[in-house]
Image (tube, helix red, strand yellow):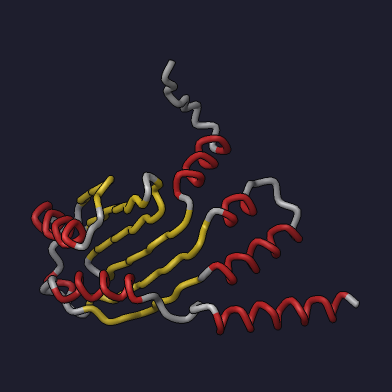
Length: 182
């Protein structure tokens, strides 16, 4: 009986994987990727690019529930709508600009595309930036860009980011207290 349940679960997972955009990234991600690639002097080739939508995340959540874990992974997964990731290899590592001017240029590109930066960092030969979008007073999208001499990594998380931050603070024992108005 267990084998039959596993086969059904795997079949459902594969079915949802192929029907839920779990193979390619969406138009918005492609536009940002293309915008960045078109406005840099470096040539990149795609190593991997994929997305996991709500159906794939739901299947992952089911799997987590079956595996008795103490971490709030199921709660975290319930707040995520989609994840998109792209890894691009640098074809000419001599052309990468990982200095403050390159970071400023990247920030300007993303701000022109409607994103706001919350973290920017340049350290030796690596540049990293985190951007967010707010919709109806709720933080619902995070976009991370990391560039070094070898590759560029883009990652987007869509969902209830406010709730994810709340879970991270609660579960991380960070001893952070929220200010309240009286």
